[in-house]
Amino acid sequence: MSGQSPPRVLVFDSGIGGLSVAACIHQHLPGADLVYLADNAGFPYGDKPEAVVIERSCTLIGRALEQYPADIVVVACNTASTVVLPHLRGMTPVPVVGVVPAIKPAAAKTRNRRIGLLATPATVRRPYLDRLIEEFAGDCRVERIGHHGLVRWAEDLVAGNVVPAAELWEAMAAFREAGVDTVVLGCTHYPLLLENLRQSLPAVEFWVDSGEAIARRVAWLLDQAGQLAVARSPVAEPASPPVTAALFSGPAPEGIAVFMAGLGLSPRRVHGAWPAELLVATEAGSA
Image (tube, rainbow, N blue to C red):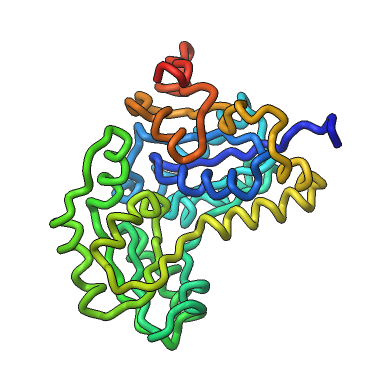
């Protein structure tokens, strides 16, 4: 087993939200090699036609797999997961894992049967969400908030910007009025805002996102492939960055290497304007 290469997981999102999922995967599987891919040139996906999201996601993931062959692809974007998974699975034999709002675990946790679902406007309108609620939380009152600003506020954290507390407090009013005791973070960007959200919703007992479930699914797939033991073993060199490359279709966000390091996801390299004939590549230490 000492000679076995670490399995590689490609994590994809429209922006930095998927880093919350990548961090969970790294915590559970410290021996796995990660590649992070963000279509920040197409961000945000929530206001784009489905055909555009499918085309951009499949093209970028296909190119990434050519340069960085992976054992598993994780689509760490709720909007993309609702439309691209069948197309990805049709174009690659690599197992593909998507994100689903954590309605089922939220229904198992809530004490007063009042759940708040926080997601993007696109996600809260999806019919599949109605089916999830009907199947797993039919006896609960589920209050939905689809907010335009939260994803952008999360993206702006990279530059050191502060989340506007008054606006966030106002945005969460419906959850406070409904008396929810459990909130589903139905967008992978939202765990990055958790401390701010706690201040806006002090009465909430349980915060549920999909990161842990995705990490468990990745572990199960690696186990089926006989790679779990290697993925669970810490790397021999603790100083070795867990992220081989962070790829951005637009300019790499200023300060992204430092931000990723704060999540335990130090990247070996950051590539902006990717893919391109001449990659704008910056060593993470100077990014």
